[in-house]
Image (cartoon, rainbow, N blue to C red; front, side):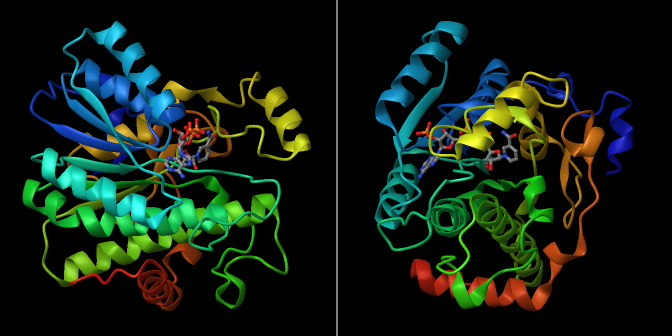
Length: 315
Ligand SMILES: NC(=O)c1ccc[n+]([C@@H]2O[C@H](COP(=O)([O-])OP(=O)(O)OC[C@H]3O[C@@H](n4cnc5c(N)ncnc54)[C@H](OP(=O)(O)O)[C@@H]3O)[C@@H](O)[C@H]2O)c1
């Protein structure tokens, strides 16, 4: 579909019909764009299962959502820390047991701009470990359920894929020699995108009926820049996020909702705000830079990710 069909205002939730009977799984939905996405989906009658790491924040989010949409709002959470591979396994097992269908799995959670090199309990640099490896494993574990539903997978990426190294640093995946809060974040988001486009190819080859989409939220006023990010980044962000260069967290949720619900979007595409620097503006298709589609790098990353997460894809 050519997203120009959405008109001058781009994609907005006004295009959504009744979503009763649909089930959406969102990672990192207690805050930011994931929380706003949950609101939009609940408002249309869908069921949302949030996969969050923090129990207290999740219960508060559910209370807030039930206050908005009533006690019968179909929202729940399963505890999952993407930094811990065993936690991803447990959450996926519980989800498979308790949730009959997945219309879309939205890989939204992330950490960003982590000030100093940190490691997940599995020994990965934290941004790569959480943003890429955690989701790589989760998508693998839930794939069959998505396929059984005729559902889709949405990966929330970042304009940051155009910054930093613009490739995967196989010789030093943990950035032991050149750790940099932004470059290392951008590396993790590029890894997520390369995984997604490679997954599209493998799904096609295996003749499976699952669509996979990549989007980004532009620059949105969320809690992504927080106490774990360098002081200068926080200062700059607090100035920027109160300017027209940055949009609301709600608008930041539009691309992921569009990718989770809209028919006939393209594969090998990249969706998000199309206005100034792709930070704000009408949601539609954005230009995709070719380094994200570098096939040999994507294949190598896939093999490495299978090894590191100890999960084999069966196609
Ligand atoms: N905001 C922007 O301008 C911007 C720009 C480009 C891309 N993005 C992307 O947009 C997506 C949404 O981010 P956001 O801006 O809405 O940020 P956010 O407000 O910080 O929300 C991120 C969510 O991810 C969760 N999360 C973090 N680490 C996790 C882990 N180990 N396991 C499970 N959940 C975890 C957070 O949980 P806690 O509350 O427990 O921390 C939170 O719920 C991310 O993929 C981000 O890379 C955002």
